[in-house]
Length: 549
Image 1 (cartoon, rainbow, N blue to C red):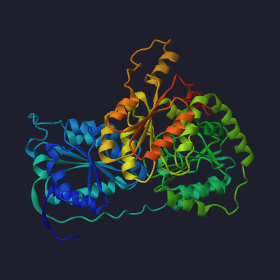
Image 2: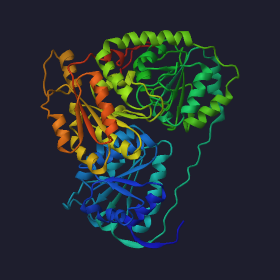
Image 3: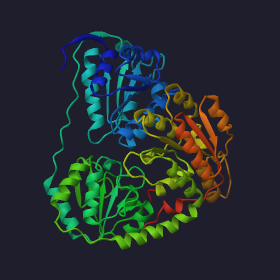
Image 4: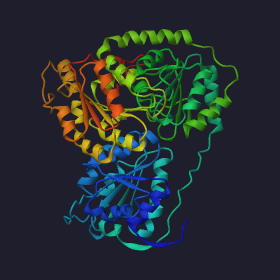
């Protein structure tokens, strides 16, 4: 705790953020937040402002930085239109358990929620933000700011991680008063329920065909997860958020499609940091399947299926405790069974040869520690099954919101937070145009993201659904696109055309070597559908309501 000092609310907020190790604010300036930006200008050695061209990008950039680091990141926006422009990114952050702090400007304090028509007035803005965040509060005076910032960041970064928001009126940001800065709030480790550990260990001891399913809640438990999987000789299924927790090349790592095949005969499923929505709702359960859930949110395990054991808290210490409670002898290896399963899956993937060719080209050119951010596009759907990733936080997928157009801004934030790493945004022509103007942001701030734009001249997934399910009655799916190479070059970015996997690999190598913002334009036709490998049928128990998509 430092002694009191006279400062503005904006200065108090920035000083508290810096004390919490935050060095970047992703934000557009605006009159409602001017003193906040002035506080940044007064301390450029400790905090930088990365300003995009649209508020949606500021929030997506903060989200991307949070996803690749696991640490809290901060964005800011003016009230009303500004904060509404961040809403999609905050919703994604909520669904992905990402620690993002949104600083929301507000109209003068005396006028809030009175409907007087002040600039950017939004009825019940605080109430709106509560729907998108774990913790929301209003800063009413300079002295309140440090404690509220510390509380918000503690909420964002302790289980269950989620976005948070603080609102501040235009008249409060610049108000001055003696302020005592607040130190970071030390997390209180959750107590591990030894009785629950014993119940889970007993279930594991009896199981002959265990299956582990991992999600985003296990990203910081890779070592413990691997130790448990190898001890049990249990295959580990991941689909999107959990990719890389167990390296894709590990013999026990299985895809969603392979996990579905194993689900039918599994006698125990251990869900680690995952909602298990699709398996439990779509694939089914019966009396022969026992379920263990490991989750930081006490409300999560019982939402749709009461587990046989629920272990609440951080995945890493719980997995370590569970491993210590297991009987000493390891399980018999299942190497032959899983090798056959991988061969079976390779045959099922083979019809996706066009996608696989491009994915292999990307994988060959991207360094092992490179980061792939996938948008909602045809090639990304195949990547969710076939992209090889050997560590957590290197494959960034938008979670259950699947927000079209999220990818480029998110990739810019990932690059800002990991400046020494190669970052590739895998985009469709439809999704890229949501934030294509942010090429200006990449150039302004020197963010060498490579945007790979797969151009089929359409919202490809929409078009496929209309072709297959609605008698080929096409509507609102075809696109008029720019010349993407000329478009990129007009910003000063580097650009290539690549119409084959080999050309894509060469272009990506050249783009990464250039170390500058770049676009690679890939013209493609209609690709084979991956949905037969993703929208998988029920294999256990009575028929139920499908959760997919």
